[in-house]
Length: 347
Image (cartoon, rainbow, N blue to C red; front, side):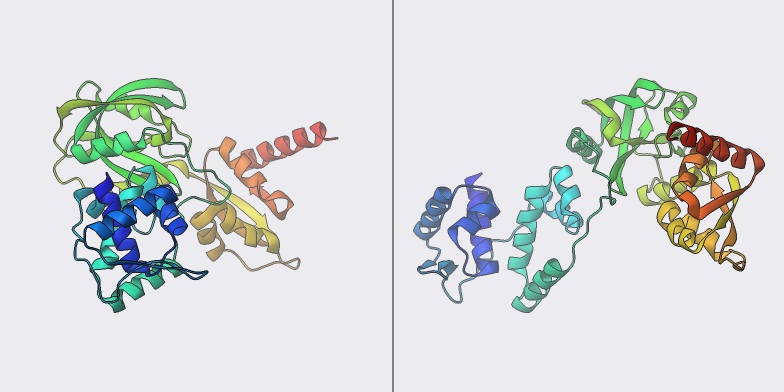
């Protein structure tokens, strides 16, 4: 709406001082011609916008002028919780609201605090996406987020590891983990808890991991795997005592314990000790903390929690020649067979 854009233009001039028309156009995502028209409209409404000509010129407000039109809309106020993660805010459809809320907040702050806020924004940036991994395409995220907010039932078409299913879900919350969006949802009345338990893909991504809250089955779904979602008119009751952060922590702890039931004995070179935390994260760091003393060649022995044999072989191969699997014997044989097959293929 033009009124919103005029207010954003006014707040940009107030917060940033002298600004050129192309800079304003880029910030507001409009043409330079539109900026000229909006500047004229502000002037006609009594706002003292001054135009400085020359190489260092631009538009600015008259000295001492400040607006107090800084009321936040509901969406803008909600978006402030995502002020440090602009990418996810855009995914949720709140990018424009976040930008407008930040402008209003800066305009409402005293000059000293506003300057401090700008310094923080210039010096700190949070990027939630993992290295060397593109973010998931999440075309249905905004609709799912709206259903979470409105507490509406979702009719979902979901792709599991073992095939596609249709579910009636009660969306309870969204979680961004390592650049990947997950939906935490209760399972509708049409699907029993036992059936819901089969939503898990078993691929380590957390799909289907969950439990019960107040007698209701609650599961976790990877948002990128929703093929279609429809929001029903019906609402639902949130389970009594449900807290998203607590559920997520308990769920991830259960998943980690369920996946890493096996222990591998390894020898690691000095380079392998550097690689282990990069490849295995906190699990690798904990294993190194309990490592034995280095041998004459600088290699150490550790015990590492791993997943199933098939997954462990792939994970351990990432350490290359900097690690040797000592046991269990079945894992050592499986790794040796894989390496032999690779050697034959590349001979």
